[in-house]
Image (tube, rainbow, N blue to C red; front, side, top):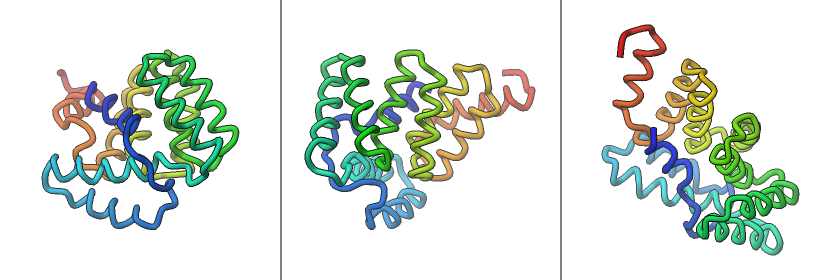
Length: 180
């Protein structure tokens, strides 16, 4: 499941272009769902993350998001968390602000806070494969494997390469009561 954590966290250093309402996203998601290789999916995923990362609001929101990402890159998660707290307060309609805070909360062990932020992310951007992968990780950490499996399967329906299928097969077997 380490690959899912890495994919969930992707975009921390990606360039920005416009938020989850961007008109380019439907075509990108259609192409992603039809991707026939991990390489092609990775290219499309990068373009999606770049769009998601931009709040569409220049000024304080964009600057605070950049500051939070920089703090993450410098290994200052608590400072980054404070920055993302400001982002979600100033731009509650910006899905990636919530997702970044969810990621940090997960990393800091705040599973309930992470799950709440993921729910908000998904209410704004139901196609957020990163948030769905993150929800799967949260549910695994909470000892709720059936809910984790459901989240991972939702993520795979959107992004066919977001989760290692061997890991998912083992989780399916566990949920269905088959010996691992």
